[in-house]
Image 1 (cartoon, rainbow, N blue to C red):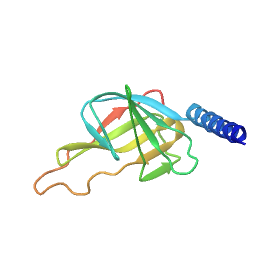
Image 2 (cartoon, rainbow, N blue to C red):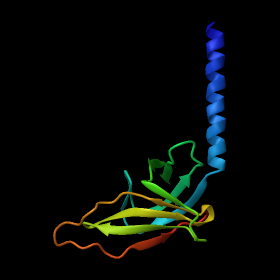
Image 3 (tube, rainbow, N blue to C red):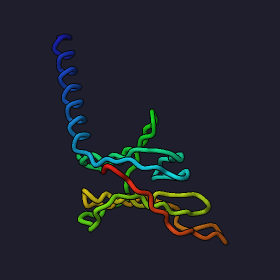
Length: 138
């Protein structure tokens, strides 16, 4: 009986692994270079080179972020489909002295992902103009 349960566990793990590999192969992915530290949903990214990957969703869309050996994930608030853009980029907005990724546009997939940022600046503080960061390879 123990052999059968081990075999079932192995087959299940193999199926999950194949499914994840297939999702990654179909993922929208790219790289970008952040000029500043930025909040992206629940993730905080340091300046430098990063990767972004959005596998085809099986339910909730999850955005995977990577930098060297560090990997984080975040979930968009909303997604807009069928956008008219041929390029991919992140929009950084400065709020209360900190940068937030509030949009990720993936041109090849015709999708725009929106992420949370603080609603109101501190009294007397002012949001600066948005900065666009190019995402390549997506």
